[in-house]
Length: 288
Ligand code: OGA
Ligand code: MN
Image 1 (cartoon, rainbow, N blue to C red):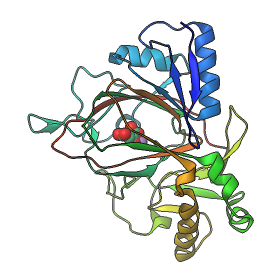
Image 2 (image 1 turned 60 degrees about the vertical axis):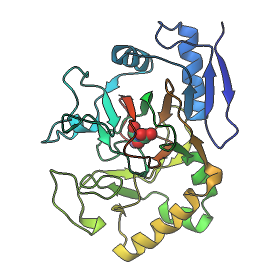
Image 3 (image 1 turned 180 degrees about the vertical axis):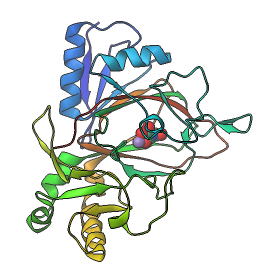
């Protein structure tokens, strides 16, 4: 059985088949997966069945594990996750048990974002394993940020070249105020780290546009109305369907994506249905 990599018919993504991620991987397999990940940005592994330790073992082949946001930000509410979940695992779920949420993100839309850009060193990868999925809805789309950068008209590119963007930590990607923060509606006043808008990928050496989320993003030096106008123009280009791949989940899927050159969004689904995904993260670099 040799591992097979099949590019998707889309702006990004490849399927990796003939591999069982619950087994130890050969050095050749790890190298092939790593190369494919750098080239295709999102990898899709179907038909997997991983325990949390197995998901973490798989992730560790590609670097150092990173903690989920609740731990990086030290949420005062804690994670809400059950006690038997390892601290490096982020449960993404709408399920409520005994009146308590077992995970994050609920059942509504999760707007376009990159994972955890609101820390100094955002995770390089997220690895998401589908344990339970609803019959319809909850598809997750991915956007190729190398391609978006290349598509920017020269006049817009000139306005973002060399500029930094502030990545607001106080709101979620859907604009909801996080518990531990104070509300400001002015993006220039929201707290968060600055990252370059055009970042050089440390492994591929390619340049990608780095947007964390649309709401409360702030480009340095701009009056707030100009900031909103420029971001709207950029986002109108980014959201063209030609730059994305929409994944329809099957139970057992494992998706591994590169946060340094991709954004993703999750569509809503019926909140009466159960959806449970377990996610691991890889430690990244300071964006440069
Ligand atoms: C995530 C995320 C999408 C989904 O895990 O970072 O955005 O499909 N999840 O639930
Ligand atoms: Mn996400």
